[in-house]
Image 1: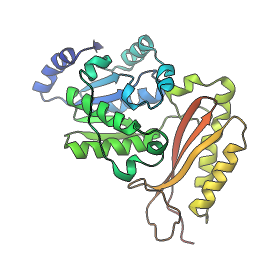
Image 2 (image 1 turned 180 degrees about the vertical axis):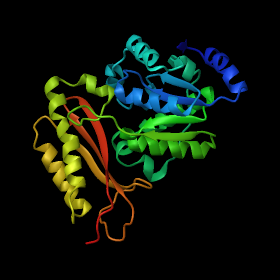
Image 3 (image 1 turned 135 degrees about the horizontal axis):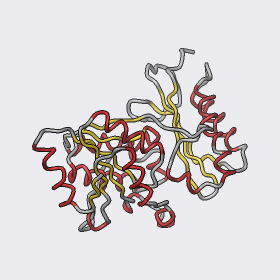
Length: 285
């Protein structure tokens, strides 16, 4: 596996593949890699000739400096995991490489950028758009891979590529979970064993709600929030049921003919966890 730290290095390495018309795929990450990231790498490798995984903790998407400071980092282990997975290139730039000058761009995602994560993490998605657009312009892949755990981020990235007219296909990949159902996340490393065990309640409650029949979204929101909050180690920050097409929250299922998604953020101690499940189209009342 080739490790590149500068734009010149990665472009020089990719030049022969580009001349030969080979497919290039990108897996953007912030490091602290786990099986979820590696599943993205596997997806990328199955659909492209060259797989690039970037490891960069992007300061622009943290609205809390403390959160940025404590974000887990383990570049040596990341390198080992990517190499063992068969990744072709690890792109590990520093902040000056990604942002040689302050990025003043602002992206207006409308309601999509102001609900759920956008509401509770102001500026987060603007930072995501800044860094992903930079990575796409540096690497110029045909495809880029993102996990469905971050479903709103996935929608934002898709919107951003359309806004900028970027010639890249955004490919979603299924959420990978721990044995108790907890969605895999780099932040899970910050959990105590007891927090990790109890956090399995998040997914089991979402699944239970998704299987309920004849319930309005408002009733399901009450059920999910009450059940998770009954655990003293967990506190729901938000739970919304949204349309799968545009992630707009819904309060009634009257007239809906599309699948919905239940999106949640839960705090346990100082750690914030997000997850989502697809709700099958509700039967008519």
